[in-house]
Amino acid sequence: MKKLLGLLLLLFASNTYGEIWLPSILSDNMVLQQQANVTIWGWTTATSEEITVYGTWNNEKVTTKAFQGVWSLQLPTPKAGGTYSVIVEGHEKLELRNVLIGEVWLGSGQSNMQWTPKHGLDNAEEEIKNANYPEIRFFQVAQQISDNPQDQLKGKWEVCTPETMEKFSSVAYFFGRELHQNLGIPVGVINSSWGGTPVEVWLKKELVTQDAQLAEAAKKLNEVAWWPSNPGLAYNAMIHPITKFNIAGCIWYQGESNRVDPVSYYKSFPLMIESWREEWGKDLPFYFVQIAPYKYDDPMDTDAAHVRDAQLYTMQNLDNTGMVVTNDIGNLENIHPTNKQDVGYRLALWALGKTYGKERVEYSGPVYRSKEIKNKKIVLNFDYAEKGLMQKGKDLREFFIAGEDGVFYPAKAKIMGNTVEVSSSKVKKPTAVRFAFTNGAMPNLFNSAGLPASAFRTDNWELK
Image 1 (cartoon, rainbow, N blue to C red):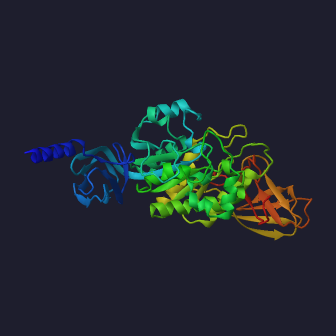
Image 2: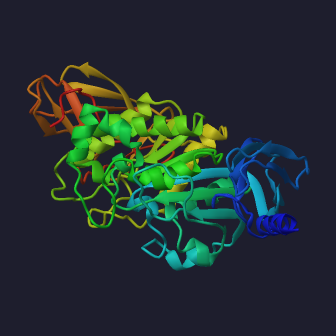
Image 3: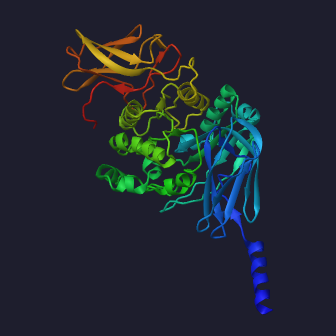
């Protein structure tokens, strides 16, 4: 009798306290990537248990068995639409409600990605008031650090309303809004960013510490109380927990904090992109923002220009990437320019044109391709300038030319169709051109679509 009573009490306890739970990224109001096998995963207090999951779009059940309390399965999703529910069944039943199927993007970086309308935004009152988009959903990742990769993070999916939008990333919101309006489908945007952070904190620690150049660069990073600076700390707590969640791609705005050793950014930034792709197991489109002009300690210094050059190098050497140029919408007195509308819009142009195949979308400003030396002039050729170049203002600004001695002088520049001719009376035998290659450079060269040209250099001389 006592044995029977004990067994009944055990069964009662397991039914009362047994639990199935999910990561926070799987919750009410979420957006799941359309026409994909999305991972649904979680944990159970039962060491081995059969778990069944289905979506109300077709009610087709997928089943797996938990192993040591951990379970995971692939759930096929339909074309964009909703709302639906996702049902999880085991020794208890969970229902995720108000779920949409659409396109999901991750936004990350430092403060210019983190910046919300409440922090400062052009036309903020009007933008906030109009932010009623039931089919745009936000997931804000809480800022946390960890020495080791985590399985869980803090955050929840929320419907886009004026109340939620004003506390969310402005850049990510405007990017998501543009996709939603142009594609006509639900869009989910995850924001996992932290102001001040260098790229190293978003990389796996071993990728930095096991590389001599990157390890040395990491030692130069300033320790600040308000953000992490040690390799891996943000990746472990704010990226790794969501790498199972199927996304369409990434947008990124970061680089200012890597001015302390910008040469290392030529390696660390593309390495981060490739490592994230490896973690997600797919060739994620990765669209990023070239850091805006700002005076820093000296607007004529070049440490920020080197970061921009590393960003341009990354786009030119890594497939499925794209770069937004902001040298026309920066603010030398504000490292957080308040025109976030154009930043999000230009990021969305890359996605619409490259990822979603909208053929009529022009998504890039002029990008330097090659040079020709003709007499005492250098003629510059550009990609993304097939329909011609244009300038805003009387004279082209921020062109510099040098001979073999490597000394750069301000140059005269003239648009000739889709090329630019550069010269200076001080340089008789020109060898190289640099454009907008200072911290505070605000040039005025555009293509016919009104998109600005990236800073560039034609030389491969050692950066100092």
